[in-house]
Length: 374
Image (cartoon, rainbow, N blue to C red; front, side, top):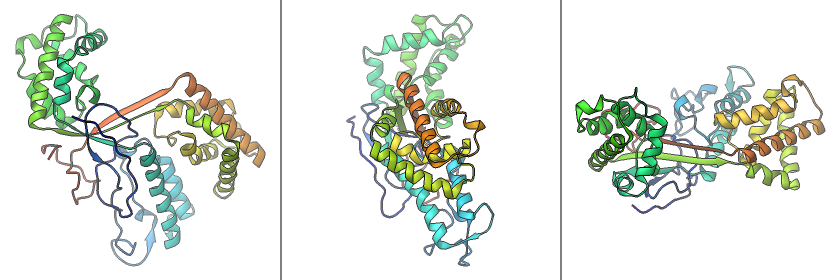
């Protein structure tokens, strides 16, 4: 299959698209993207006039669209950001809000999503067994399979356990859909596994036996995928500090951004030097620094947490404008140095179970028996 990457853009009108996969994607494999994700989901609970389902003309905090926990993906606003936006919307109380306030906060949320999707597009792949068959027949197979066996093989592990563990370590680069997905496990992997010798599956496996049986299993899986293709949303990104460096090297842009962040902080936070305030400020700078929102990528969060420790963020309560800007600059520099030493690569694949252009809300749970490719 030919590969073609497309850059999603925010459509002027919102339509239902695929569920929310994780983060960014560049050319990850030679599969051709099945769909370019360029549109956001419809706003739940809103009529044409922007009111609640009861159409009483009043707007409340729960009228804002909420992403379910499983949809908190890289490059989309984190749960912390959503809570802060809602708190700002309601002035910290569960009260009625004006239409203008509602529109401003909703716009911020959608623009945050659009910025992430524009910077790091999501690629939708149709996995039909062709790439997997190519992998099995290629010179790559034996060394990669041997490397996998060295990680999982032992005298106490049965061939079945080795094979299932191996599938967990394979990805779309090999032409393999996520083995952890329940639908894939039940409808693709298990039928393919049943074609192997039952007695041999429960015996300890040597490397030679493992390589031979894994090849057979993958060939069986490729046949199943040819009959029932699986739609997968794939995302990947590398955080190496280069975006932070570009920002720090551009003094004009950095100063302008720090001025903007400081003005926002004056309104939103009393303790300007607190950890919570600094994290909120970093989130406002994340897009310009090429970083994910705090709370979206655990590995990057750990780097930010270490950087916060270097400035004793937990012990601070208040700083003036100059001190605040210096704190943020020092934190960004510490993050840049750590990511430069140890870049963080993140990748994830999510099976798309619902029809891509279904009129139903994407928040509803899809039935597990229907094919993801239908």
